[in-house]
Structure formats: C-alpha cells, structure tokens
Length: 277
Ligand SMILES: NC(=O)c1ccc[n+]([C@@H]2O[C@H](COP(=O)([O-])OP(=O)(O)OC[C@H]3O[C@@H](n4cnc5c(N)ncnc54)[C@H](OP(=O)(O)O)[C@@H]3O)[C@@H](O)[C@H]2O)c1
Image 1 (cartoon, rainbow, N blue to C red):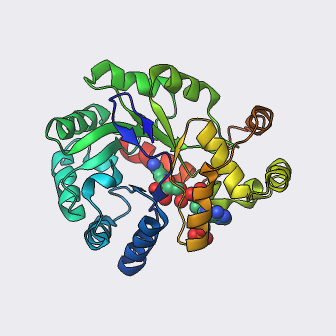
Image 2 (cartoon, helix red, strand yellow):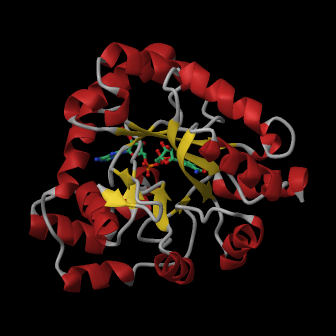
C-alpha cells in the first residue's frame, strides 16, 4: 500500500481490465485475481465492463472496503452528463463508491469535468480523484488554476522506454502519484526482448516481466498490468518479493527513449484533438 496526498491508501499493484468485455471471462478473471490476492481493479467508463465488475464483487464474498476500484470519466461527459455518468457507473458496479475517479484525458471541458469529480468527492461517491493522460506539466497546472482539490494521481502510459523524466519529477515534488498504464508496454517484443532486461532476468532468476514491474515499484509507480492468463497473474505478484540494485535501476533508467509503444496513444490523441480542441 502507498499513501496518496489525501491520506487514503492504495495497493501498488492491481489488475487492469482493459479489453475485458466478455461477461463470463471478465467475471472469471476478476475472481481468479481475488483468489490470487489482488485487491485493486482498474477500469474506465470506456471499457464497458462495470456490470461484470459488480457481479464479480457480489459473488466474491469479499467486503467492499477490502477492494480498491478505480475508473475514468471520458471527455464526452465532462460538460453535460458527468454527474449522471458517475452515479450510473457506481450503480452498475453495485459498489456504493469508487476509490479513485479520474478525468480520462486532457481534452474537452476539463474544468467542468474536474468540478464533477470534486462533487463526487463531496457526495462520498469517490474517495480520491485524479487525472489520466495529462502528459505535460502545464496540463497539471491548469487543474491547479481552478480546482479546489489537488489531484491525487496522474495515470499515464509509462514503461522503461517511456519514463517521463520531467513530468515524473514534477509529480514527485507535488506529491501526486504516477500510475503507469501499459506498464509492460502490452508485452511488446521490443521491450520484453530488450538485451539489458533479458540479462537482468537471468541474473535475478526472474522473468523479464517481473524485472520491468519491479522497476516500476522501485520507481514509486502504481501499476495494474492487464492479463487474462492465471500464470501471469500469479507471477506478476512476485515483483513484490525481490529488489533491484540501485546500479541496475540506473541502467534501466538509461533505456528511456520517450517513445510510446501503444498503438492506441496516437489515434486517441488525434481523436481527442478532432472532437475537443
Ligand atoms: N488511462 C488510460 O488511458 C489507459 C489506457 C490503457 C490501459 N489502461 C489501464 O492499464 C492497464 C494495463 O495496460 P494494458 O493491459 O494495456 O498493458 P500491459 O499491462 O502493459 O500489458 C498487457 C499485456 O501483457 C501481457 N502480460 C501480462 N503479464 C505478463 C507476463 N507476466 N508475461 C508476459 N506477458 C504478460 C498480457 O497478456 P496475457 O493476457 O497473455 O498475460 C497482455 O497482452 C489496462 O488494463 C487498463 O486498466 C489505462
């Protein structure tokens, strides 16, 4: 667990639910994750799996306050139906509140969107609020200009090839946690077969994925790798039980190319630009 700037606590490792739209698979994957020990789920109003999350929560028998759930509002809802969307999502999840609620993108009427998130906090519908895909310091400063609450997190694409040295320094100074989406770069071969990471995998007797996830943890990132594979789900948890030396952390730092490996990032940026700028 790590503490956010509003003193709430969040598990550093969870499960990402992007792409899990099949009701049976989604529910089974979540139940398997709970069984393995996961207690944090990350989703988005865009992923369309709220109902299945609610079903899995119900059949797990776990107490609501033992599970941490995060979701995101899409820019389409910032201006008009944000409050309704938040209430509907929570109703569908049958979870009473979400632990973390984020603005999904730096696009559109972020002021209205942020005010809706603050409203959700006041109503007890969200315990923490933050942003996602805010890649520039000036974007973060814009929230500070009109917001009454400081964001607790910024969720961005982040992995050893895309480390955001400037932004991550700013976030650390401001006590805003970096949440890394795409922490394994979608298991992209360019990352998974990187010679340094493979060498570290051999020397620590850990998988390349575990080396990458461990680098995130020691960098202070919160992560929720996506997987439907029970073996990967279990082995990803074992990034918590070993440590990379400072020397090896520095070597991984040198891999940064500030280059996205996500095939969604560029089209998403274009889409947001077309619709909201
Ligand atoms: N805020 C945003 O805009 C945004 C955007 C995208 C994603 N996200 C969030 O971030 C989460 C994670 O991102 P992501 O799922 O796109 O990418 P990711 O976690 O970097 O990669 C997921 C891929 O890695 C594979 N994988 C997982 N563990 C592995 C292991 N130990 N060894 C080898 N392969 C492994 C998975 O395949 P298997 O199923 O075969 O394991 C899957 O194909 C998402 O689920 C979502 O919650 C947020």
